[in-house]
Image (cartoon, rainbow, N blue to C red; front, side):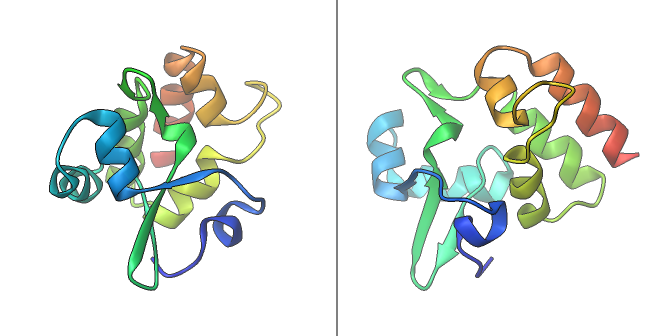
Length: 119
């Protein structure tokens, strides 16, 4: 992905580097890269730097339900940029954004929407 996160999601969001993600999760940086490849996290490459939305992380790790949501949408043919846009798009039926809903433990609602979009 070569677009910035702001260009993808339509507004500025807080981002963290892979090194910062690794530090927060207590894992090597290479593990964070692997998590992105495997769809447990999404990131955007800006030149030679990767950024991950800070909203994808909690004090305990990756937001519960995020990896499953990413996988459902990837399986449905969505590209990572489209998934990022969707996660940060306002949805009046949630209300808020899908990532906000995941962060507030409303993952079932988000997963249902993702499944409906993917099929």
